Length: 258
Ligand SMILES: [Zn+2]
Image (cartoon, rainbow, N blue to C red):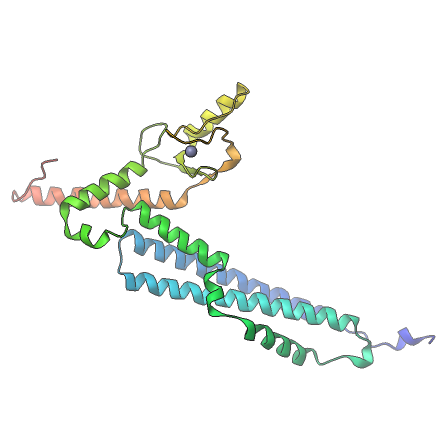
């Protein structure tokens, strides 16, 4: 069929492409929402906010995860349909909008709510919350500690111990976590150890007593932002406590023995 290609209608997909790329910027907004929700949920956990408030944040996170899934799926369907149309002969061109809607509905119908709980985003969110709970020493005994001054003191001592660098024995300023064994240290101190050992062509052993990680590398270290946040919160808590004690002390009614 000579000359056939010259009468072929030219289909431009540039409109679809630019619509798609602007849709992708929605990701940025969703990600911002996810970050803000994480911050608020962590702050609530830090300050032992009510379980109800934390669970509201968890629901909100699931909404974001769901939006993220929907967006991903829509973009995917549009890309699929675009590729399919590009293969079709021009006289058999289907209605793109109808096709996208149909396919998108099919995909959506297969979605299950419980899958949202298994997504990386949600699992990462939950593990950060759990980590925070551990760090502030506000585990399951939470309710009884707030009612009991002595238990509260123990909880503070326990969480304080987590804030001490195993190398410098001082409170952590820039904690980094070793992803291999899970231990955290002061960034400067651990890097010095690794570099010194490596210069001597030796393996650097994790300085935590009893840890069997015998080969540390700088690439195993990453900023322990959860711990950093917990330490900052702990400092604020201590400052508040100190101020409270001083105020009470000045009034001469009660002076702490410690
Ligand atoms: Zn270790």
